[in-house]
Length: 172
Image 1 (cartoon, helix red, strand yellow):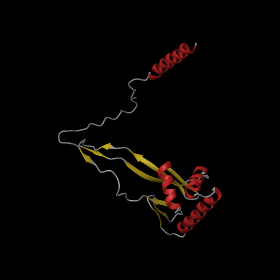
Image 2: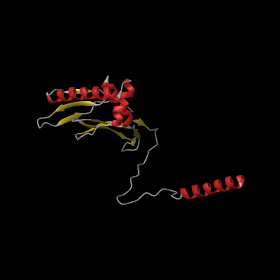
Image 3: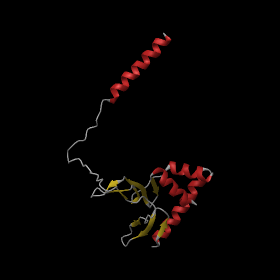
């Protein structure tokens, strides 16, 4: 039950920290044009792992509390029990599989290794109609891409002043 809630939290927030284990993050890679320009590769979401100290996450505990409909202290207790069980399995050199997150195991140096799951669900590459070739443009190093109209805020201020003047005229 707690695993399912943690997966839900990871998907919703893009980040999940487990004390003494590390941080899992969702890395989103946008759609890309295949090198030949004749197909488009769909967007991909990957789960990445970073072994670093994790502080207590109040938002996670509030989330667990609301999802399990218990008080925050009970949710923290459940999470800590699950975390201790997970750490025990990993440090006993067992491979631990977390659905949708990946597999965790300990290497010879005592470091935790994360293996991302093979995702069968996702977007496939789409071939473009015959004769259509997309070109990818990449900015040269040091070249700055400027927006077409960087002075939009001037128009917003003018409209704001006109609105204030209209309200002042109406009420005065």
